[in-house]
Length: 269
Image (cartoon, rainbow, N blue to C red; front, top):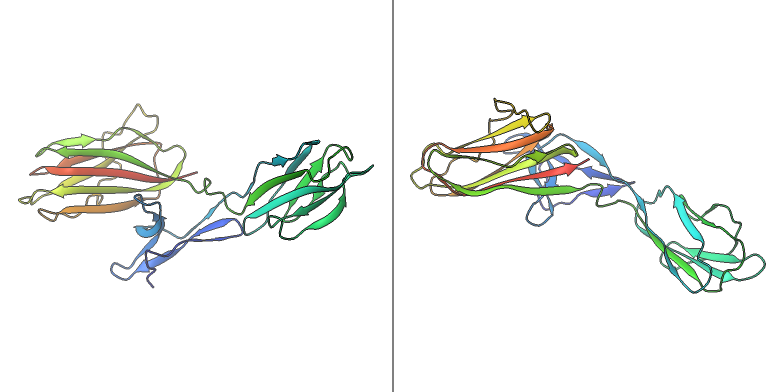
């Protein structure tokens, strides 16, 4: 089975499902990851099947009115789609009442007496007023609950190297702190000399503390794009298990590399 790169992921009950397929050309599993240039999701990295939990959020409250502002919200949102909540005072009396909507005001549940204790609306959302009276008719509170927080499945794209390398020279990237990153994709792009035969070598060196670095490469096989003389080539490699700190070293093996770019796109914890 092959999944076209233009497909997007789907959200189901607060989980972002990273879909996996088998590429018919090399019979290896591929998964949806971020396209660094546009932020789109695409198939471009060997990966195992994963389900990544994405936190749901209850938004902050916006109060609209001139009266008593004493409502708070809480709970654990269970909805599968975003909901726009509005809570509005519909009677100011000895015991005030409110109406509420979870679709931005299209439909309402009216005449709910304020109790001064937590009161459940829908999908696990709870509101609480500190007093049962003294509110102003028409005053309202608005907030949005999101089924999936886009910042929880957060991808960071770090340009590590953007240079040209002289023949037989090497360049090492700055240190990358991976303490909050669960996995990622290393992308290497370089312009090969028209007379090149040997190409480049890409190595990853690691450190447990950012000070004491390995003297031998942690990864050094298959990270570089295949040499095509006179052409600009790019290769992305999945790094499913990451060290604490990382540096990327690129070495030219013969004729030099023009316009070398190395980028790491990580999925944060």
